[in-house]
Image (cartoon, rainbow, N blue to C red; front, side):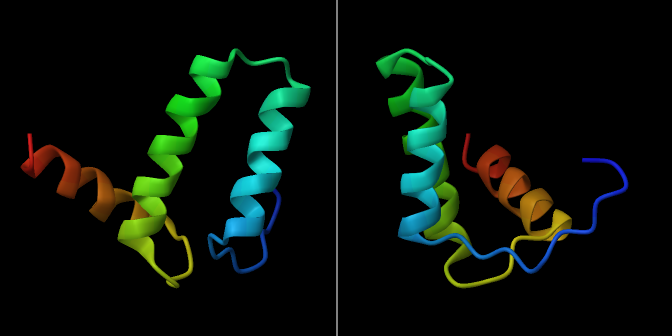
Length: 68
């Protein structure tokens, strides 16, 4: 998405449902969809109602690595 300015993005149940529908339309396997859903829900739990930013993504990755 180079060159595109995105509006504030906060993860919501509705957005997760939209993403699941998108994956189905892309004909992803059910196993892939379930894996993506586990991952996005874990990130959602971490992010809460914070706006998703690059800094938040980096902090989440660092958190995952520190818990290995």
